[in-house]
Length: 342
Image: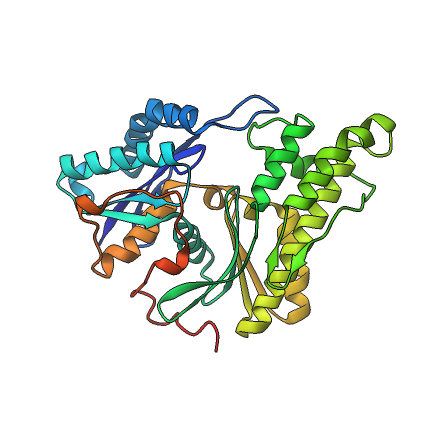
């Protein structure tokens, strides 16, 4: 049996998870939450991670009932993400690996989301919609690489939602996206917003600029409510995502969709994607907030796959990068999972 511990800290979540041969033994995390109307700065986020990471590490070991000598490999997020939090997490992972005398593995954050989704849902060969605060991509696997079929050409869908939340001062606790989702359920009036799909790609900057400019005017004039704006924004953004996902499915000949990333636990997005999948005779796979939102277990799972295939990261190569796309990662471990598109 192979046991891998994973350290994730690319944004405002710090999580440490332990995986043993596909079983999640523990997965504690902490979230850095700022006041309404504010985002999170890299330096402040890194300071938060430094303050709690050792506590989270102890929790992970205690919940799993393991000791350092039981761990076979230490995995950490190499990127993409915010520089300062990534460095903080990587430094602790390097230190732990050296203190425990264990091999180290740098993991692509995006691949961590996908591998965790595949583990939990048992999806075989899906078209993947990866949606989070920093990424929006439609991905499929072929020839030992994850290939990007479509993506945002400007900002991520989660970033669009977060920035809208700041405009109308929606709480960041537990997350702005979750609170927008709850408010949207009470919305009854659809406000038409810019809809921008360019082939396989999407653009969210125009809709954000429009709603930033118009929100307060609409609310103060009584034209609509904050709940109506949340509803309208979700419907528009998610319709764009469903459209490009369906287009990628047609290109790949895929009959499975897997939604991963923090925005992926939005039930309205899952509901809209489910409608499209049923119309195509396809199947939707998604997880809840335990595994959609950034967590250590997803890094441990991707690290487990990589370690079992013989990969390790030498100490001198254990750097981090804020920019790292799935295409640059070659995976030798998906023997059966290599015919995503023709």
